[in-house]
Length: 134
Image 1 (cartoon, rainbow, N blue to C red):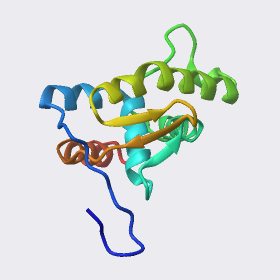
Image 2 (tube, rainbow, N blue to C red; image 1 turned 30 degrees about the vertical axis):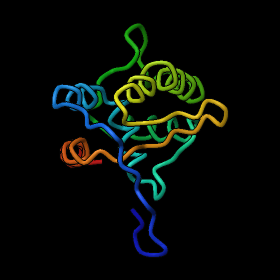
Image 3 (cartoon, rainbow, N blue to C red; image 1 turned 90 degrees about the vertical axis):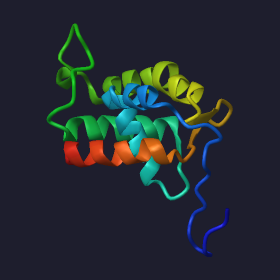
């Protein structure tokens, strides 16, 4: 489906996640923050590095973010180490989970992530973003 010239064309996924899957997706702040960032991109695409940077920024902007490191205070980590850990967690845990659910697609060669429009997820995603005041 093409929109008017100059606007991005959002690509809709073939399958829709169930309500259980939607709430599972949104239950982790790193997944939410990654989706917030991707949803706000004009072409729904970002590199893993861009995604990790955005997630780290959003984690520090949110007072309600759950702790990510159990044995050390995340705020005491070197910023580069925090970004590295976040990128690894995204790459090995969250992006594959979202890819399995048909929400994202990861191009391994370019390390680029594409968000596939999910209207049922976006309704809850927008509500969560509003509640987190990000």
